[in-house]
Image 1 (tube, helix red, strand yellow):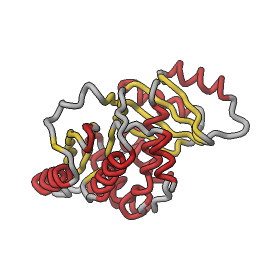
Image 2 (tube, helix red, strand yellow):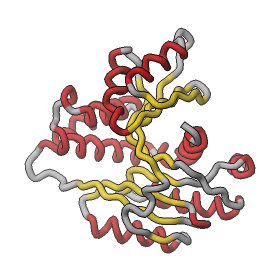
Image 3 (cartoon, helix red, strand yellow):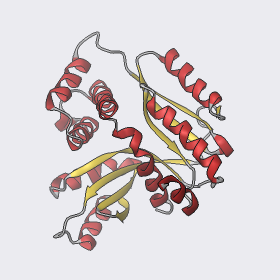
Length: 249
């Protein structure tokens, strides 16, 4: 899929914020709880929960944490978590899509609106960015020496994968939204360990900015990612060579 490498580069470059261990565990715990509320506590019959547990294990989240999250969501009267999304524009008209999980919608709305306005952006209406972002399934798999990439790719394409790209020692697999579960099942049957998986919002067009403006935009993204209610942030800033060099300084 055209542009995926650029998106992936941006995601990995800005992944430093996600490296904060406590925040990462909190995000995954919320995803586990939402998955349980949506499809039940049995991972075998709940693909979303299976994916969340898989992601938890990939970052060495303690088993007790996973069990507590499942129990919390299963208990009557537990946290009333809900998923909410926000769409808007940052510096230079870069599109920004924010996914949140919250137990207090008013708090979250106020916080997201504040970050947009204080950091040179503007909050838009839901659906305003639908022409920019496509919802796709994305799997990250560790490449191994004995893996036949061509055969692996053909098997995944038969299962519904749209694209496969190699970035360093990682294989990035992209699927259509409706084929996510089929590809997940195929990877399980092939005994392929998935490092990370989920539904992502991938831009189909990108916007380049001067380096100083791009840094301001990325600073706003950091503020979003530091918010306790924010699960994921997506944007369509183009990672130009000039910007990539500036971020390495």
